[in-house]
Image 1: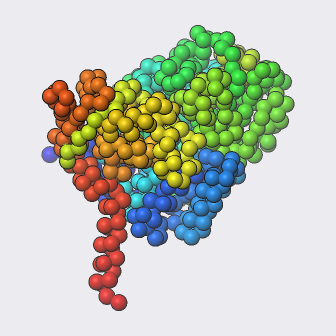
Image 2 (image 1 turned 90 degrees about the horizontal axis):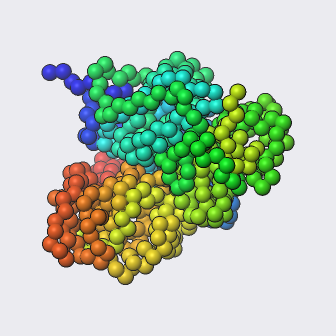
Image 3 (image 1 turned 180 degrees about the vertical axis):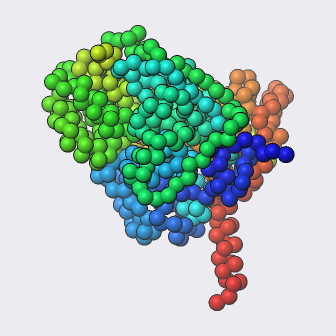
Length: 420
Length: 176
Ligand code: SF4
């Protein structure tokens, strides 16, 4: 009898469960390589105590990210962050302070997103680390609290679907356009309870940063996790950030995907998701001209160095249109450093941008560019549900690439990036 | 496990955690106070209907999509919800519900064919919902044994407490 062929993700889970083999649908208990909590979920600490936790299983593997609401916007937030500092001090675990930026973007900078690792964070966009060949998924606060005690958690072994990207996308097209195109065609739940693998020549040619745009947007496709097969680009990147060893698992030949899709990106036009759903996608050129009150460039999806660079280059020598505001929130402190070093920071300031301190900023709707009722905001972030960018469910959020964001900021209305 | 009660129906798809409990309330530390805002981003009357009409909440596809906030389960529990019947639910929300001991049944046919206030009886092991008012039985997806086991324990907290007590008893038995 031959064992059924396994996907690389299944091999990661099998290894973490101390098994040779796992099958989709079965429930396994897997040990965790990194557990993270962000500053919204102090309730994880409360659950930890309620479950009679005293010591975290391995302080070196526990990260607390003060990234969602930084610097603290009000007293309640300040109190919560204080409690986190005390917890981290008492447990000796890692604390990412308010000046560092978004946890998801810090992990690769520190070589913590590695092939073969199991990463769980109290954040739905955790699948982003699949770009590095990790099995990474979001968990609730109480779930994480149990991980802090046991160092392991249960998973239903997921099916895997393959999204292959082929063709030759033209200039002005970014990974974000590809992700929106997939969402427009396949909707917000085709990945539910599954892992989405992104593959094909287009993916192989992407930088690591652009690859993470696909895996982070897998969350909006409903996925439990995402995966991109580690290649030279991955391995060089990881080795550039850490000396820690890691294992690259290979998918067995003959593995059967639960579904396979192919997208030929030749001729793809810049894409935009209209309010209030990520799969409400159009070509930008078909809806050009909508007046935009605020452009937000930021988030783990659209506030990374490459995004800032793309926006700065497009804005060089230009000004943000009057009547429109541009808010830029860079992902991490390192992103800010690079923007300063390369002169992008100056360009953005001169163009009229408000630049906030690094972190999640307006993406989570907690601070740093909240949008009023009936205002329209074009954002490089990842979701546009009602109420996402602040209290008002009437605010309208449009999602697009950093290049479309830059063109729109200059024109003051929804505009396709310039074609060279 | 059987649960009965009257239904409150919000038959919409893709109700996000941002709608179940908008992000700006996330720092309220008193859960009762937070629950005053339950489902506010979806329909402001729902919170009252859960108080006056019934305790079984019914919704459409992909319920609880979006952020991982556990509050999107807690505020329902705090609002008196005893069970949730949906066409389907997003993974993290579902997992949080299991962990916190809030029974959820996936039943694609019920939401389209039930009126607010109708009395139902849910049989979790069988995955069925009986509409007591009309006598119709709707077949949903029975949760796995593992999940039923979690519900029977009352969720992950009692389970982990039990484990912790066992550990400390073992230590005591081990001597010193
Ligand atoms: S930037 Fe936005 S999507 Fe990313 S972790 Fe922060 S709040 Fe979540």
